[in-house]
Length: 119
Image (cartoon, rainbow, N blue to C red; front, side, top):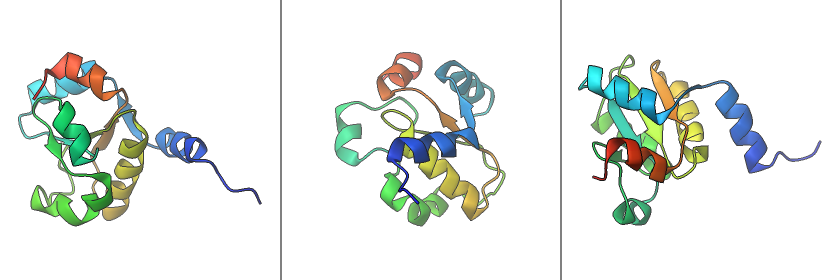
């Protein structure tokens, strides 16, 4: 059996997730002030450019840090990263933990900043 490549893993993971456009994410954020928008990029990436109204929890510590922000399994959580790959893997992990309302904002960080503004 051949090993899967990262792009294959990400594509397979995304196919099982709810993915949003940045327009739809902005609309959800406007309707519900309790939406958590989590940027799973590394702190040095976020320091250079950060979408407005996002929380930075790097992918590598998400499972350990998410409960500092919510323990509600029905909390609306939107995840994003630089290109969508880490966000997809992070979303699958949160679903595995028991969160039921998790979506990936499937776009680049630059595109999300264009829609939400720079934070």
